[in-house]
Every structure is written in structure tokens, then in C-alpha cells.
Length: 598
Ligand SMILES: Nc1ncnc2c1ncn2[C@@H]1O[C@H](COP(=O)(O)OP(=O)(O)OP(=O)(O)O)[C@@H](O)[C@H]1O
Image (tube, rainbow, N blue to C red; front, top):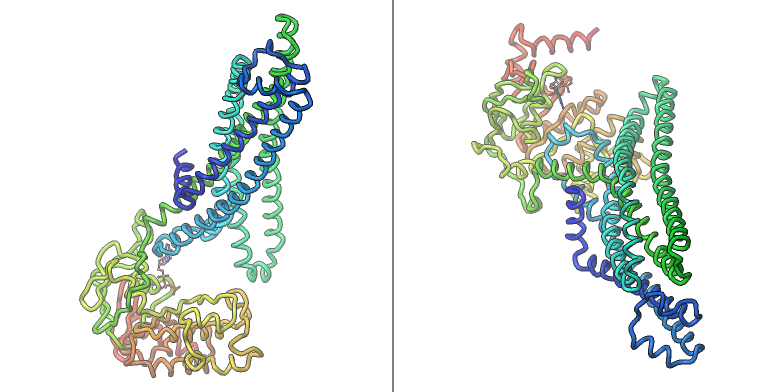
């Protein structure tokens, strides 16, 4: 219920007054429908099927008017009123349906945007801990279930109002019969609680299946090259076949619950009406007119009960999706690092140095292992600093801490003597251009990918950036040049070409701090040298931090930091460290020189 109210509040926040107008409209329609029922009584009375002995009370003024008219006139009056009612009802219903669709789709977009914005504003730690496919599942499948579920809840509320009005009208026509029908309805509903419980459990299974499907598909398609090259296709297809079987079973189970519930309602209603008619006629010699009346009321009210029951089952099935979505929104809010005023934040200019003081970091607080331990180091402004070490030493973690993506458990990062806090975090982030190991490119043209950073960049600026990243030549040779579509994550480019485009994009931003995490690893010597030369031209103009395995790339670095096992073990300039005999740096250097000459 808590989850349901949470999203109902969001629906209220989104739709406001229109929502209540629609609910009111629905109630009005039910009133008109009720009046339709009311008109059947004088009709039956004109036809001589019903008379005052049936115990029906109609307004005397209305009855006097009818009695004053000839039969044909009364009939025309009733039929005319009936037509007016049906027209009015259908017209209002049409408008309400259109409005409903507008509110519903608007609400889906509202929740989608709220959730996506919350996800985007969450910190890096949130993304490390979350499975991406779960987020995709929440933004697609679960989102649909939540918005439909919320709407279903409102329909349930409207249905209840609707039913109450009809009960009121039925009660006015015949209190005894109405009480009898309601009592039967309540009894049947009490026993049908089991279907609501089952629907909820089934909903849980639907959520789990949805999660596993999106998770599996994301993994398979991301790793399709591994799958193909290692001939894993069959095992993946088998995985999907097993999933399909579970899916079919789940859908069948869901359909069974709904079909059984309907069956139960239909059987019980027939049984009740049969027993009632038999008892009335055989034991109490009830008149035919009263029987017609009870059938009339029964046939009007019973489908309402059945529809409320079906609404409740559908809401129950959506409850697990409500829970997941609400938890996701709350988690995002707790992990929020970007405030609404982010756009107005200006990039900072690093004047002296970025510094780590006594920084220690661990990914998992329950484990003893620290990815970084007692880091004390200064990175000087407008110099090139290289970070090197073996695989898994902690280099990327160190960079993530410097960028404020990860928060150290102990110690702090300082920018020009000011501690890095949530206050200056975004301004630091805006001054950085970061090129990761596995660079990200959108499925669009090269131009789209570059303009992502600066939508107003001129043609000349784009080519200047490409030239810097040693990619102007290969881009100009492409058939469509800058307008060449590069496929998913830039799949139509080679690894080295991708790296160079991302580097050009990073430069286009005119950062004051440029961070390259293994950014030239996929380049051949010729292009690596070009980039190295371009970086050398930038030296003294901006702060450059490079993680490099190939030590030849960092020959011109003013400072080299060597990390091993989460600890800084060497720190100095290239020549100095190269001459430290027995040090890790000279060892790595020696290995690479041997590898080149062997
Ligand atoms: N998200 C994570 N959760 C838990 N442990 C992690 C996570 N990311 C990295 N680690 C661990 O932290 C340690 C440092 O990892 P890091 O990625 O910083 O190393 P690295 O020096 O950049 O390695 P490489 O050169 O291979 O990229 C490793 O032991 C790694 O297993």
C-alpha cells in the first residue's frame, strides 16, 4: 500500500486537478448509467410487467406525469430520455477516454524522466554497485507496470465510487434486494482474497523474469564477439530456451489466476441467483415482478464487483514493480551528487596543485583489503604527471578519487589547498576532460559525437581537435567524412581510431585538466608518437595526468608516480626513477626495452 500511495502522489503531482475532474466525470457517467436503470422501471410498468405492488418507490411527480400521458406518449418520453442519457454518457465517456490516454502517457513520461534524472544525478558509487541491466529493466518493463498499476489503482477508486452510486440507486429501488446482492458480493469477495495473494506472488516472478531477460540479453549482446569467437552460441541459445519455458509457465500461471477468479465469480453468481429464485418461488411464493427486479439489480451490480476484483488482482501483480521502482528512486536520491544548479557551475582553474592527503579507499567496507592505502601525493598544475604500475595496482581507482568520482573512507583530496567537497566537486569535474580505457562513442556520426561536448563548435574547431588527436587524416578519407555513421559504441572504427576520436572530443572541451587512462593503448607506434608530440605541445598549458602501460609514452612526463598494491612506492621525474636501481619503475622499463629488442 505504501508503494502504491507513493506513486499515486506522483500521479497527483503530475496531473493535479485534471485527474480529479476525470474521476468526477467517471462518477457522473455512473450516475447517468444508474438513471438508465431507473428508466427501465417505468418502462416495465407501462408494459404492465411491473406494478406498485413490487415495492418500488419512484418519485410521485414523475409517476403522475407518466400516468397523465397516453401509453404511446409515455413510451416515447421514456425512450427519448433513455436516448439522451446514452448520448450524454457516450459523449462524456469518449472525452474522458482521450483525456485518460493523455494523462496516462504523460504520467509514464513523468516517471521515466524523474527516474532517469535521479539515476543520472547519482554518484559513481551507485553505478559501481548497480547492475546496468537492472536499471534498463526498471526504465522499461517495471516503468510500464508501475504506471499502469497506478492508473489501475485510480480506476479501482473510480470503480468503487461508481459502484457505490449504483448501489445507492439500487437501494432506492429496492433496499431488501440490494442488501441481499451486496451481502452475496462481500461473501464472494472474502473467499476470493486468495486470487489477490496469488497475483502478488506471480508479480514477483514476473519482475524476476524480466530482470533476468534484460540482464542476459545485455550480457550476450555486449559480449557477442567473445560468444562468436569462442563458439558459445549454442549455450546462449539454450539459456534463452530455458528462459522461454519459464516465461511460458509464468504467463500461463498468471492467466490461470485471472481465469479461475472469473470462473469463481461467474459460478458463484449463477449459484446465488439460482438458489435465490428457487427459495423465493418455492418457499415464499414471490411474485414474478420482484424476481425481474432482483435479476435487474443483480445483472447491474455483479459485473461491478467482478471488475473491482480484477482491478485488485492487477494492482497486486504490479506491487513488486512498485517496490523496485520506489527503492530505486530512493537509492538515487540518497546517492545524489548533482544539484539542480549544476548548469550554472563554472569550471575551476587549477593554479598550484591537486593533492591527496592520507587517502585510503576500499570498494567493500566488509573486506579488509584496501584498493588504495595512505596516499600522499601532489600533482602540479600545468605539468604532465604519469601514473604507472602493474595491472590491478590501483591506478584507475587513484584517478577516480582525484576526479571525486569515489569518496575516500580516510583522508581527503585538496584543490589548491581547498578540500574537495560537494561544494566544489562539479566545478572540478567541469574543468576535466577524461579519456577512459574503453572510450564511449554514441551510435551516430563522428560530428554528432564531437558536438556532444560543445554543440557550438565550428567546423574549423572540429578539424583542429581531430588534427591534434592524429585523426584528421583518417576522417577526411572516410566517404562521408565527419558525417560518417560509426555504429554502436563506434563499432565501425578500429580500436585506435575510436581512441583518437575520443581524444579529439576531450580536447574540444578545452579542459584545464586532461586525464588519459590508457588512452593510447590501442594505437600503433606512428599514431602514438603523433599523440605524444601533441601532448608535449600542450605541456605547460594544461595539467595532464596519464596512466600508461607503455612507458615510452611518458618519457616527457615531469612527474612519475608508481603505485603497487594500492601504495605509492616511487614518486619522482622520469630520469630519476629510471636510475633507481631495483625499483619497480626501472624493472618495468627494463622489461619493456627487452621486449622491444627481442
Ligand atoms: N568496482 C570494484 N569493486 C571491487 N573491487 C574493485 C572494483 N574496481 C577495482 N577493484 C579492485 O581494486 C583494485 C585496483 O583496481 P584498479 O582498477 O584501480 O587497478 P588498475 O591499476 O587501474 O588496473 P589496470 O591497469 O588493470 O586497469 C583491483 O584489485 C581491483 O580488483
